[in-house]
Structure formats: structure tokens, C-alpha cells
Amino acid sequence: MNIRRALATAVAAAVTAPVVILSAGPALADAEPAAQTQPQPQTQKKPTLAELEKAVAAAKKVYEDAVAAEKAARAALDALGMPTDPLNAARIETQKKAGDATARKQIADKALSDAEFELQTLPAGASKDERDAVQKKIDEARKDVEKATADKAAADALAKKAADAWSDARVRAGQRLYAAQQEVAKALAAKEAAEKALADAEKAAEDPVCDPGNLLVTAALTGLPSRITAGTSTDFSLRITNGTDKTLDRLRAFTYAWAADKSHHKVSRDLLRLQWSTATSRGWKDVDSRNRAGTVENLAAGAHADMKLRLTLDAKTPAGQGFAFVSALKAEKSCDGTEPPMTEYPFEILAAGTKADTEKKKTSDTKPLGGTSTTPLTTATTGQLAATGSSSATPKLALAGGAAVLAGAATVLTTRRRRTEG
Image 1 (cartoon, rainbow, N blue to C red):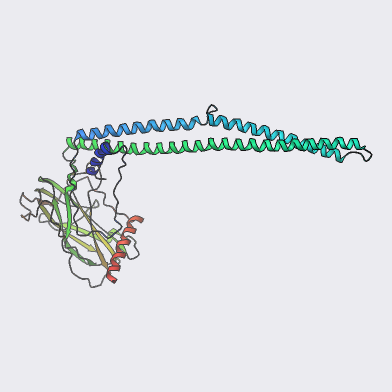
Image 2 (cartoon, one colour; image 1 turned 60 degrees about the horizontal axis):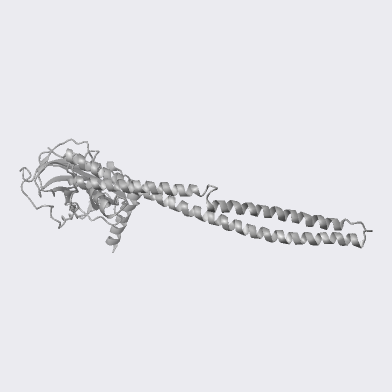
């Protein structure tokens, strides 16, 4: 998430919603990249420190309320387990009565069994009066069994009803506790985001090098072919535009090449050599391991500066789909430590020896942000391309061959194939 979006959302959280979750935007888009469209500048009004402090206070209050609600929900759930809880007490009492009724039925069942056994074991010479007396015991025992069975059924029903009521209450209490825990998590995320936005703003106020204005600096490619044959080199240009309202002392250019074969497997970076050059760089220089190209110095508001790029594909590079990514960073590092906006440009890789269409991609109709200055780059009004420049800060441009990246590249490649075959 870029710092400007974080600041704007933090303020909105204090005014329009009790809880706000701040989420990062999608990484590599599923659809085909908009190859020739420059990122548009963010136009939101920068929040003041007072507004950010208000957002932090509001987020803290929401978090504290959520924690209190979670504590109450947990206490309510725990209370249901206490013998003094009415539902739990009813459950315990009805279970006891059901147990007593079960015991009485067992006694009645045994009495009936004993009476029937006594009748069966009467001697053959027993009198009618003796037999009638035992039969009377059997009849009375059967009545006792019938009553005990009915009593047990009624007690079991009451016990089940009480147990279900207690169980349902526990489920509802558990759901309320879970919901309260979710609200605590959301409130904590919003509070931490608001606190970070305030800390970043305070840091930016103290250190002008840390500036969210990176979003107003754009990078775009010109002249990248739509097809490149393995074993060849192609030259094109990188244009950096200052969309801010002031001259920028120093800008760092970043660029990166990535490719996948027709089976959507990542191509080794060793097969893709990317170089840069300026009038003062004394020849071609390799883009370093941190994806850094040259620097631009003293670039006036609304002006742009160009540098040359050269992409060489090793003859062993398999046919497939390639991408060139470019970006520019205003300061030595961004305030939130994340990468600046990236612009991506697709191109098709043809197998070595294939005759490629030499047509170059035209630049976008979108004009450089802030103006279309074409003053020579050696003047102070547009800025000067510096040959070298050290920087410990590098955007996170590494697009290793993970499944999500390969899936995105595969989608683009499939789309391009369909268009070509159609």
C-alpha cells in the first residue's frame, strides 16, 4: 500500500466508519497489461498532522470499545458454564430427574422379572391361591413398569429440552465472542494503520527526503518492439516525468525484464541482459542486481528526461512472452518502504533465427504529466541525466517465478495468442 492511500484512508476511518480495514491492491493484473498507459497522479489532498492525530484517536477509541465488547462476550460465555446460570441450573436439575426416573424404571423392570421368574419356578403341586398371588405380583409389577417408562420418557424430554436450550445459548454466545474477536482484529489493524500513517507523516515533516510525492513521478518506455528475436539486441528509451510542482534534485530509475516460455515456466534472468546509457554515462552499463539504472538530477516541474535502454536476449532464450517493467523513485526510499507504481510492457519472444517484425511500439497518447518540455537535458529546466549514483534503497521489483506470477504471465500470453490467431 502506498503512503498516500494509507493517509487518506486513515482520515476517512475517523469520520465515516467505526472500523476500517486497510488492504493492499492487487499485484500482477490478470488481464493483459495496459502497456502504453502512464500511471495517473494521485490528487487527494494530503491530510494534516492534526487530521491524522484525530484519526489515531478515533481508531484507538474504536479499538478500546471492541476490546471491551470482546471481554463482555467472553464473560457471557463463561457464565453459561457456572451452576448459578438459570439455563445451566435447569439442565443440571432435569438431568438429575431423568437419572432418577431411569433408576426407578430399572427397579420396576427387575421387580417384574423377579415376579415372572417366581411364577415359572412354582412347584407342580402349587395351589391355585399360590399361583394367583404370584400372578397378582406380576400384574402390579407391569403397572409399575408402565408408569416408570412414562415417567422416564417425560423426564428425558425435559432434560433434552433444557440441554438444547443451554447448548443453543452457548452457541450464540460463542458466535458473539467470535464476532467480537473479529472486530478487535479489524479495529487493531485500523489503529495500527492510522498510527503508521501519522508516524510516516511526522517523519516526512522532519525529513523531506521521505516524501509521498513518489506517486507523482512516472516512468514510461518508448520504442519497445512488439516482437524480439532471441540472439538479438534492441534499443529503446525510458522517459521519466516530474509530475510534481517543484524541481526534483534527484530521481532514481528502475527497470526489470522478465520472461516465460510457452509452457509458462520462468526464463532464467541470465538470458535477459538489460543495459542503460546516457550522454554522460560513457557507454552502456548493466542494470545492477537491484534493478537500478541511472539517475536524473535537477528535473524541473512538469519536465521529463530520457535515457537509452538496450535489451539483449541470449540465443538460448526460448520463445514465449516477455515483460519490461519500469519505475522511478523520487527519494532514496519511500516513506512506507514499499515499491513505487510500476508500468509494465509486454513483448513476444521469437526463437533464435526467426525473422521478427521490426515495428516499434508507439508511445502512448498520454502526455508527460505536468507538461511536454523538450528542452535539452543538460539544462537546469528539465534536469540532467547523471551517469552514476549510489542508493541503498531499491523498490521490490523482483518477480520470482511463483505460481501467481506464472499464472498472470500465462493469462497474458494466452490472450495475445488468441488475438494473433484470430
